[in-house]
Length: 284
Image (tube, rainbow, N blue to C red; front, side, top):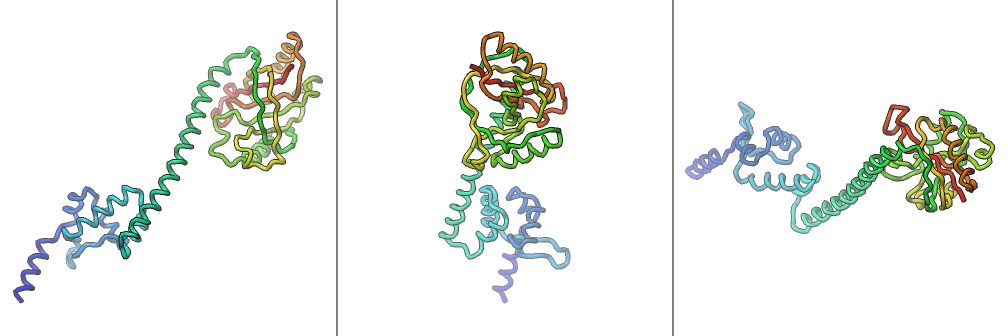
């Protein structure tokens, strides 16, 4: 009888209200209520009249461990499993798994950071360069493109064509703020001044091993006469005529197909006047 009285006194003294425990462990009372509801961290006593939750100081360690596991990125489901028949080997295994997951996330974030950095640098450069309307001779290395070999005759076909090309790429944000998409105009159409006839579309590829090889073509490296052209892709006649005149006046000859490559497009602007394409004509 005496022992029971002492035990009840100790038990009552050991009761910590939900508010006090939340303050001591720097969590919210709603967090503790949620932990109770999902069976992760339950109070030692609930007043049957008031419904107030009370905890023991002996639970201090478990709540602290839960907080630390959350800081390590574990889900509540994983934490419940962590406490289920806990032993050293199991705890070690779970921490190793979480570490491996974190390593993958870090690699993914590094790739995302590099992609964003490239896009920012590209836009900063192209905003300046696209304002220049003079013709520039560039030495461009060999490139690979993905093309479906379909001619584009109108804007509807263009939308479907670019959609199909984008779906062929297994990359992070391959099109936004990039100069990956473009048009091909044949040498014969250039020489006959048929600039707005149907043309093929393409996308430059970075990882050709992830794309069906039958759709990959190589664009030879060499000298290209280049000019920026503002507006929609088919508003190109004046710029192409200008570049052809430059080629002939400087005693060059056209040495292949014309490329019209998106620089600033509808992925980054709604203003038509801001849209910009670079026209590249191979010369020798």
